[in-house]
Image 1: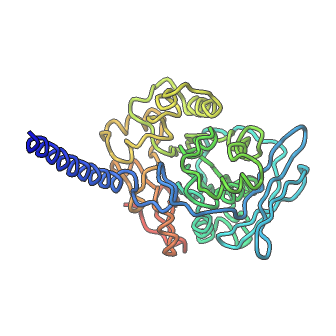
Image 2: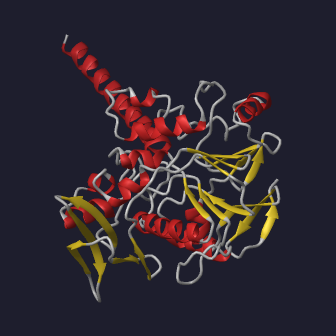
Image 3: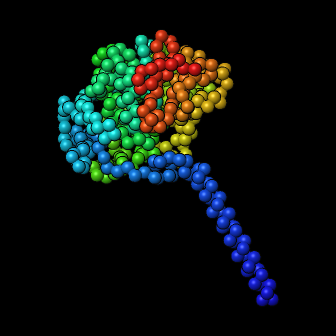
Length: 387
């Protein structure tokens, strides 16, 4: 009897030993495949982020009839956090840690909702998914004559299209946004235009969904005693400005959208109506699980849908969508491609690249549109026809 009990205990221990071992092995494999996909920064449940307090701002908050400027400013050996009351006419300074640059700008006295359609300009430079990469952004703009060495607009009556996702993953989000804000004002004075199109990461930050925000911003928010969610709320300058932007714009006969418009998107909505509903979704409160299903900001919406970039639709489906909006081409970001390329027999141009890897290697690429032709242009302005 004792021998039988001993044998049963021994079998149980062996099964338990190998069972736990197999479980741990499977867990390790799952970690490698699904939880740790190689990002060196915060990405979903993974947190390997060592970023901390550094230069940031201005962050302009409207409170009790006052305008307050929260800013982390670099000094000789450290950073200084400050909060100061300002007026509309004050010149503001933005510091860029990554490149050692700084530039000045002034606030708009008011902001207005952007039109959904524009005539075609002589030239367009388009790029997407910069994700706080100021160095790469600066190099592609300077190399293609959009700005000079002092960050002034030098692109005349031409247009710059920023096709979404300038938030998250990088460390110079605020700086990129203020440069865009500055250039938008300067471009319009010269008859040009800067188009800032909302992507899914803009929407997440505007709604306080901060899954991909770097630790730097959490530390800066704590240092400034200003919650990060407030930086882009309705009571902030950048929050008000971003709430005037579109998710879809038509320039000439070109349709610009961050992710893509799916074939079965309801036909009764115009571009303007799509944009109105996207903006309404920013401050709309959803019950659990409802946002993902929302027609305008959910997983199958124009700011999230990947079916165009991954060519899941037929040629006829895609052409029907273009015909519906009286467009010749759709330009999309959101889904990384190895190079700027044409899809659907040239009807779609995909422009989301791994800008961080490219800029670390001294390279950057964007889409150049001129005389009806599409070119890939680099940080030196060298152009090749998109294939």
